[in-house]
Image (tube, rainbow, N blue to C red; front, top):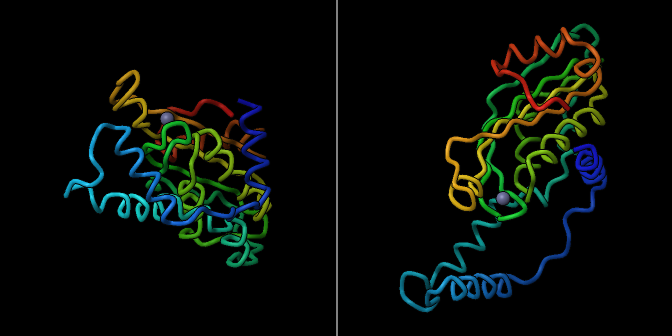
Length: 213
Ligand SMILES: [Zn+2]
């Protein structure tokens, strides 16, 4: 877990995106190949437009590679020296894709931070989740990337991120376990060191608790 988080932190910190891409035609050819691999005919009527549609869907699913999460937060913070209570945004809809199977991860994210001079609009917190979710992910990295980016940009007294999600690679293939959800958490600063602060956050989001951090 620690190794995964370190990797996630490196990835969150190193803004190497966007990378160069192959042509759209090449991407559509790859989808045709996967259709043939699945056992169907990419030239039959119902499938003729599918490579184009899949490539368009990929543009939506993975739009996060073209966005800079730090710029998103940095441009909107306001200076505030009187509000230092916990800011909590809970039940943020999460739609991502697992990097092992490229199938959906669906769930919700809860974010909190204790400001130390800087706050950011709540819509920006939701957008931050979207930027990282719209990349190929594992839930542990996604959780750590959101927390690390908030910590680096806002420099708050603490950051807490909890994600609860179901992985379709577990529910519709492999071990086929519907109803199982995975909970990951990342606690930084006072959320890590102060039990009362952490408990306040966890009770606010009405969850039994995460995996620890
Ligand atoms: Zn998977």
